[in-house]
Picture 1: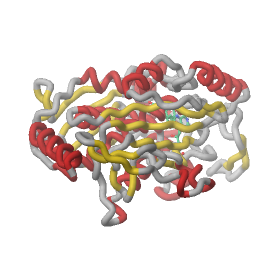
Picture 2: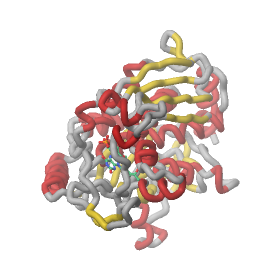
Picture 3: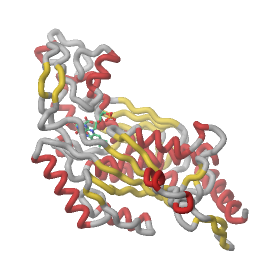
Length: 388
Ligand SMILES: Cc1cc2nc3c(=O)[nH]c(=O)nc-3n(C[C@H](O)[C@H](O)[C@H](O)COP(=O)(O)O)c2cc1C
Ligand SMILES: C=C(O[C@@H]1CC(C(=O)O)=C[C@@H](OP(=O)(O)O)[C@H]1O)C(=O)O
């Protein structure tokens, strides 16, 4: 299974092609739209999100509400495009400077300068249009289909924000994915605890007032993954490593941890490894889940707990020092429309990247051209795991 996306942030649309989902999976546009709505929201977003109202058009591979097994093609329009038609048009224009000045002032922390040097762009718009996290809308659309596929075999996913610039939500995880969803949906920052929410909003407001930006930590929780997704046999078959890559691929993500994560560095083995137990009719489980659902690159059957850290947004209303690539003069970067915190939105993106990697792992282990084949194979594997 694989997917590709194309499209610029201020171009007409995002275009998505996904290959490999079996036939017979129920997919409704509304389900994708609901997840797109979740990604668009969250405290700290900028003016762009007031313009967009992301909705998906299904233009291939799904008929009468079910996948056919053919490649799935999706489109998400950029409503902002109509304000950028001249600047973003594909056709040659006589005098580019009459349309708009080149973007020649790279923002520290964004892709602008590296992309310009690498691809030889004197107008850094040709970098920023594609490096923009606008593309994460496409990933959420793909991830929603992955979530539906996983749900059909008993795997559920939720996400939450655990920190924004030092303001932490230390509340324990509720037992049920449904409760996590309800509580985070009621929160403007997608955390569980109301007091933490107020603190997080405060640090976002303070940063905004100072022309600054903030990052944070998000957590994705997966319940119901069967034992043995992924493999220990080769570096590129370890599922925790693949998930880490998928999470790190989200714009502005700089680190990933599973379970107790970096805290493990200061704990002895007796306080890290999860003791194994067995019960009639239930099979094996762990007494604790400090390893976050993975041993040997394979799922243990315990919930997967993966966290990612997002750096603060690079575009700042109070700009940092940089250099104009035309004049080579130093300057304070020009002020652009921007989010000042996108951690709540990123938590939704993280859920969907994890969903995609799990869907790949399920497909690899269980195969299947039709959904009923997948469902049957997973059921048999679960029964064998309990009886083992
Ligand atoms: C949901 C989301 C929204 C973002 N919004 C902005 C933004 O408004 N302004 C900005 O400069 N960066 C924003 N970013 C971060 C940049 O896209 C990112 O820092 C940039 O692509 C460079 O990539 P890197 O940080 O991974 O190195 C956002 C990231 C995410 C995940
Ligand atoms: C468009 C989205 O996020 C954008 C990500 C982004 C960036 O530099 O990554 C910059 C901003 O775009 P603009 O420059 O148009 O204001 C964000 O709004 C989105 O999430 O849908």
